[in-house]
Image (cartoon, rainbow, N blue to C red; front, side, top):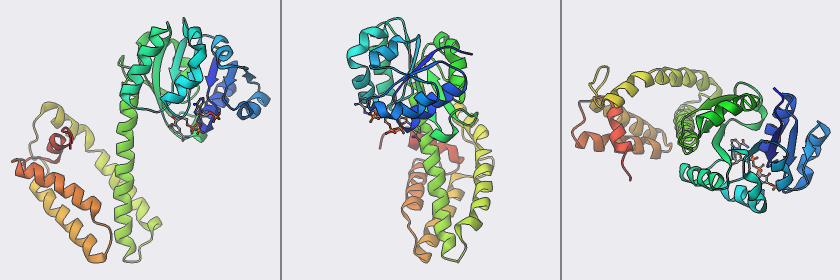
Length: 288
Ligand code: NDP
């Protein structure tokens, strides 16, 4: 596929994106506020546009990846009339409201707009490991899927342009929760002289085992019924107390264990002690 592509924003991520397009054979035009960041890409065959407007005008498809949504508006600012008739794929991180607002902004200027998110670090861009999320009009995703596939594994999430950002932040919750749980366990084990590298493979197996529960638990959430098939929440809460007590006894941080138990205690107080763990979705689904 040799569709011409424009990349605006050549930070760590933008340079990785432009490099992947080049290596996949896309004629690639680039623009960055600080032009010198294009040097290596130009040496690889990219064309450096003198202005953001000329970069937009270079072809039908522009991918933008800058610090935040304000940086996107700043970068495209005076060239926005040139958006008309073009497709803008915004891979800048942000929240769902910003994404929906940007979709209205771009569509109001006659552009087709997909909002995306990148769940990968720059070195894996261009490999199947890089997860590229996109949401917005299906036809626009289908039209530009081959280009997105040059960046990684592209997933279409739905017509609501906010979805890619929502999935992105949902993924952040997963990432930090898994890492924090692992760090808690590592801190506990280090008090007995077990080093992090010894625990890591064991922890990895535990995390994978827990991940296997998700489809069945998701069914309970979607059905709104939480029969205790393997364990009741009140049993889990006793184990949570052990985690807190052990952490206190060996002198490591108890904030995370206490947070976990506080939520479960509230669910039990609300009468859910005999139900299964995913009943906690009710705690997670209200503001606090
Ligand atoms: P960098 O800080 O390396 O690059 C930021 C880019 O934004 C630069 O091109 C910078 O231009 C540009 N920029 C910032 N403000 C403005 C402005 N007001 N006007 C015009 N251009 C501006 O960040 P990354 O490349 O790492 O990140 C870019 C996006 O990608 C972020 O939203 C980030 O969350 C996301 N992302 C990054 C990941 C990573 O591992 N790096 C992973 C997943 C997502 P200049 O060079 O002139 O300063």
